[in-house]
Length: 476
Ligand code: BG6
Image (cartoon, rainbow, N blue to C red; front, side, top):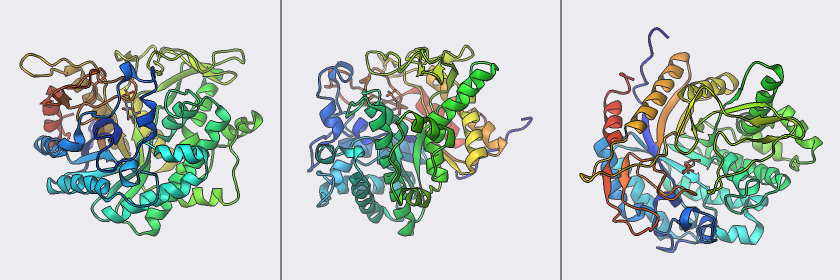
């Protein structure tokens, strides 16, 4: 573009977190046990056995954290509610003390003119529901999740205007039921697609409920979108990229926005005997749960080539149960992920591809014509606290700056972007990487020994974002 459009005046310059990764206070005020509380205690599952028992103690320090947000000028804060604080046993009697924490947090945000963005589910399923009926593998989850969500809708009606239903359904389902790196650590594609179907129903059900209740504001899921590229113009690689986009992206987004699974992907799963059982009434429910916006968590793109039938499968994972972008993996007979020679990579082997965000936003707009809220984007790095208690994270500033620029380009293209929540606000517990991989604007003194001072220090990126917000992004 010769000239870029301005960011909308009410653009939500935000930042994000998740309950398990920041709160700590894992068994305080009547909180129940979640699947993550259990999983982290199994030896070898997380980096040096780190867990969220204390995390960065946001539960006790939320006022200090909100004061920092206020100082920075943050317009929105995305956080998640721990289901087990509201219902220690997943359902039944409300734990008032647990709900009170979120009432306090939301009031504190509003008092400081920060828009709360509330995520209903960021992976910390009540363990009781896992034990009783295998959680996401049962249809019963739909009712329990809707009941839990309804309590929050009632409690925060009018106060919270932006709601996220499920965080990264595609990630918690694939990691939980195929890669086995998240709870319940199952590796079975058939079970994965069935659990995913119930998650789709649960998602649609809470959205339907939200609309039936005439809730002010909007609701949508946050999808982990990695747009798919073909490595080159070889038609068989282009087809592989189409297949990957269908199986890895449309397979969720089409269900959210059209209430239907993509045709080619479903046909493929049927042939392989992997398609979920869809009962009478399911399609109606899916169609009735149309989101008001789509949340997107964007980190990187996915470059693929055709993968022969005897080609690479799931591939190896690193010691923390994750796959780097240069580690080959794929679906035999369909696609295989390869290294993209055109982009840089982080120290965790994640691609740095700001243009990919613009491409993703464009694709969503073309296919679905729905407003987008970027609910996560950020750089996980080793940060160094200097003797003067400073953190010179110029690499993060550069990363974020390029992504903000890509968003402005996308807005100029005509994409309706509601806001941008960076991941993350303070440093926090990475599910599988402990505290060595940091994302925040605010450094927290905490490490694998889990006895840190928990003091907060503003990184250089804190001031960079402060300025971006002041100028409403007009100089990016
Ligand atoms: C997203 C999640 O997948 O990525 C976050 O929603 C997570 O909860 C973030 O922390 C970064 O992942 P990681 O593995 O680098 O900590």
